[in-house]
Image 1 (cartoon, rainbow, N blue to C red):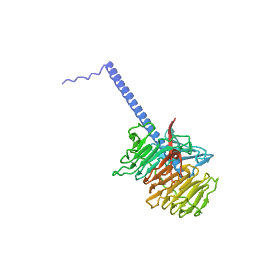
Image 2 (spheres, helix red, strand yellow; image 1 turned 180 degrees about the horizontal axis):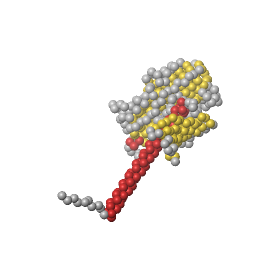
Image 3 (cartoon, one colour; image 1 turned 135 degrees about the horizontal axis):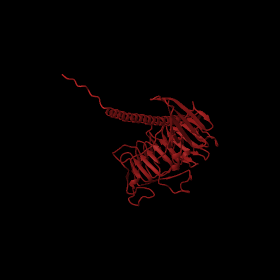
Image 4 (cartoon, rainbow, N blue to C red; image 1 turned 90 degrees about the vertical axis):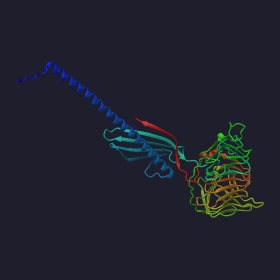
Length: 439
């Protein structure tokens, strides 16, 4: 047997193989380096996006903290410098060795010199490389309005059984809607009733300049009823573009204050003219009859464990009179019957007279039947209200259900949308929200 000697590759072939291997290794190194770079950049982008989200979360958390302090008027832990309150909320940790904090600042925190402005910055720091990211939220804040509708039935119906008119004006322009302004078309009549057996806003011969909003069935109307706006056609009389199925009426808890002063009975004068804070009175009932007059000559709050009565008999002139120096807030736990001379509000500003049925009020139906024009607001979300005279009303009404048995003339005061009433626990809300990404 003969053996053949293995022949080695020529040196030129060996060089070509080595070059090919080197080229392959170079391509593999470039591809691997590109892949690693892409993964690193993806991780950076993912981390940055996550931290952006965390910074927004921190800013929103800080905004909630600021609203809580405003709502509860609790500034413990805050630094007060002039009219600015500031605070730092820290101790937040996230994945990937990341920490965060929020800096809070409220300009004009007590609301005495202008609009409250809340600025919150959420900052996230990645400890591994020291990079930081932050997001700033800025908004104005004020207490939520209560009387956003002219007439609202919270869970019941709104009924115009005979006739009437409903329109709007703005008492901040002029206290008299007939002077310096034309009645407007922004009054909203709303019903939160879920009944499907009959219409939840019943319009018998009533003329509404504004809108009707019902949760279930739309309004019913007689041939003489009208619902229109400034650009509504002459026919049909009911402009269906001004009807909606999304009524909204905010409901807040009634706040019954502590009252240290006993309320006098019969004819009396209460309050202090020129006072900047209210005088608080407590009593069982207000029960006026004959020619008795309760005069309110200063800011006054009355808390009743019983009824609010102004009785009616032939020749009765009994009334509550609020002078131009006065304002009146009444909380009552019993029945309400405003008859006789009613409530005479000399200021002619609806915000100066507010009536609140207490949350535990067990009377189903409250009433008002007087020929005296009523300038004020009524908030009885758990009680029905019946108005039995052809009364002129300036202001707003919120009740479980509202029934007008005759022909009211109702002027909704648009300025009430910017008013806050101490008699209810209205939360602070944000508006004009602006978000800023910081470098």
